[in-house]
Structures are given as structure tokens and as C-alpha cells.
Length: 202
Ligand SMILES: [Fe+2]
Ligand SMILES: [Fe+2]
Image 1 (spheres, rainbow, N blue to C red):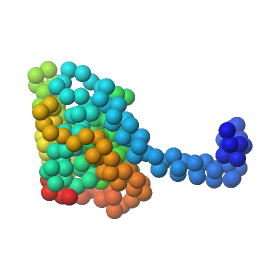
Image 2: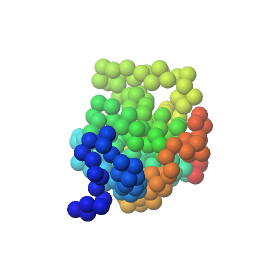
Image 3: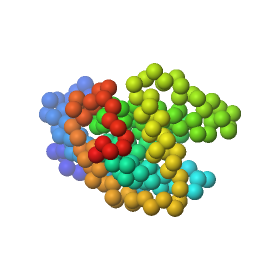
Image 4: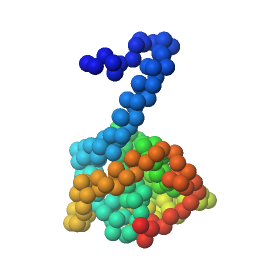
């Protein structure tokens, strides 16, 4: 192990300015590899929930391919691609996990849609399983409500067809790299409150 690349402290309170400068530098290098880690996690979705006619990865690729073919911009394409990324690690709030990952790098509208898509998606099945398909009505006055309706209708509930001709994961590497290499929390990326059409926005 390269000792010049390790801090001097064993308790944080003993750290020096040089220690923390080194950690900043190493963190920056680590963060640069985020797109690769996202790609790896997406690949893992092939092993996720069973019972559907497509794997979770295939479902994600179908949604992202549909978004691309609809002429959606890169934020929407990547949102469709990662929307179920939390399935393996956060089975009871998987939508929030995707939103947390997206938040520093994507338009606020996309992050909101990721966070709430589980509730919007209930519209398609909850009445068949004893739940409330209209649970999404709690967002009915939110400026992004219609976005949530459209996202799930176009690229989520519709993306379970094994005969659909989807792009493979590598096709979306440039999209993932573009979004997750952005400087975090930039106003011109977050575009708070702004709505961008799902179709024809590229
Ligand atoms: Fe989902
Ligand atoms: Fe989904």
C-alpha cells in the first residue's frame, strides 16, 4: 500500500489539513468512476425480481429505449434507465433510492418522478391486489403530477414486452456518462420547477 496516499490519523479529530486535502483528491478520483458503478449496478438488475416475462434489466432497457425513440432528452432517457435501480437494495422504497442517486445530477422534475413513480405505477395494478390505485391523487395539485402520470404510462407500465426490440446496456453508456459526470447540484442542470416534455425534448 502506498503510505503517501494514506492519512496520518486514526480518529478524525487528529487529522491535518494535508490529510483532508488528500482525502478530497481521492474522493474526486472515486466520484469520477460513478458512471461505471451505475452501469455495473444496472447489469446486476438482470438477477432481480422474477415472475415477469422480462428481467428488471430488460424492463429498464425497454423503458429507456422507448424514451429514446420518443425523442426524450438525455435526462429522461437516463431516468427511465435507472428508475428501478433500487429494486435489489431497497425493495420497499426502491423509487426513493433511484431519486437519491439522481438528485445532484438530473433535472428536479426527473428526480421527483423517480421518487414517486412507485405510487403512480400502482394505478395499473393496486385495485387487483386490494390496494388503492388512486393513491397518486395525493399529488394531484403538484406541478409535476401529469409528468408522473405520463412517465409511468409511457415508459414503465408499458415496458414488460419480451418481443420489444430494445437497445442493450452498452448503448446507454454515453448517456449515463454524460449525466453522472456533471458537476453536482448546478442550477442549470436542476432547473427547479421546470417541466420538459417527455416526447420530442431531445
Ligand atoms: Fe419501479
Ligand atoms: Fe419499472
